[in-house]
Length: 548
Image (cartoon, rainbow, N blue to C red; front, side):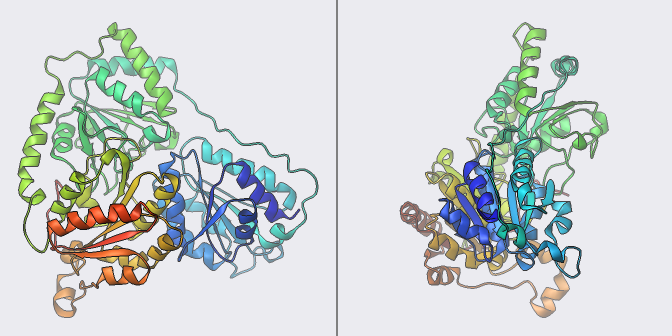
């Protein structure tokens, strides 16, 4: 058999259901023959986002795979790898490669060299006989430790070469590790003696399938929980100890509790100082405990007073058991639960935003749309993602996620339009869920043609466009340029564009029209047809506790 057939058979053995792809790549045909459905995108970075959304929604248990042509295909796909790398998402990248006889000849593009800074591991197959070994290594990297894109370059002559003998491939298992028990014992003692602890939870809690343990840990400590942007939905936001999630914008609860905390316990998070998350104020005046599965994260941005390296589920289990042992099962005992103050702050905050969330103004207020969306879907059976810019900062604080993996939060690298591919991948991974992405004018301008990908592949997503005809978030950055040249103006009738691509669409100008159109869209998408709501909104500059 040919090398390309070996790759396809191994992908099938590893459980691949879809091959997100863009031609020309011989793997597309070989995978189709193995029963792996090709999903062709209109541009490579959207296909990468689809693989990303698939992996996030399956918690990395079913890995998204993307294949692209050597040279220009790999060049166009680079942004998707950068985003997945920044958010630690396990996806398998299989770029074609120039024949090995062209190695090291400029200006040929070699993915292994150029992707080094945006992949967890990368290699190029130099002999057809090495395909099983390198595929095994790739899957081990995908299933062990911190997530991230893994790349295996497939030169054309290797794919066309004859592979003799049996493949002899076995499905790969990853490894998990847990921290030293003496360290666990010491940190449990510190946690029990803290006065105002805050738990800072990241997406590592979801990848470790540790959301139940996170909940138990919070309750036995009686400690409030905030989540990172990628970690949003790892802790139920209807729980009395939930502070909500942090992005560029955040909740009043997070701001106040972080400020007053004497200890911050990070679990399943890199503790990266990013513009897309609330930073810890006065960290030198607090006890910082950092638990992560990557030792390179420890002391990277915050000085850790204590640290634990290990799988989030195993770490939390060990801490819970030790806290119970040290407290005779009672956990951390306080006179008044922080949930009392938290509820008070939450009500104050929502009252401050009531006029926005219930606004009758026209053009529509984005917060009114978010409010109506929450009222008219089942959050437990809905997956939502934002896009870069204002939609992210408007949605994240107010969308209440109550089940794991029902919100796809993404940041650090924030490419306009990435949410469209993410939500298509999510829908393919969990077709029974209602899947919604919220984007602005600039984002749909980047990737709008890939709505046709959803039509062609019967991916029933709902896209909500906040259409205000301007890059509102950038007004402060170029006032003169805009005044003189109208630099920030953009727009269009996206309902008409979507209709031309085969998408069910409506132009929406009032809150009631939005509710009516949303309910129609839900029915339409149940049959596999995507829907788009082109919402005419105001320029919105008000954000909840934005970064300074």
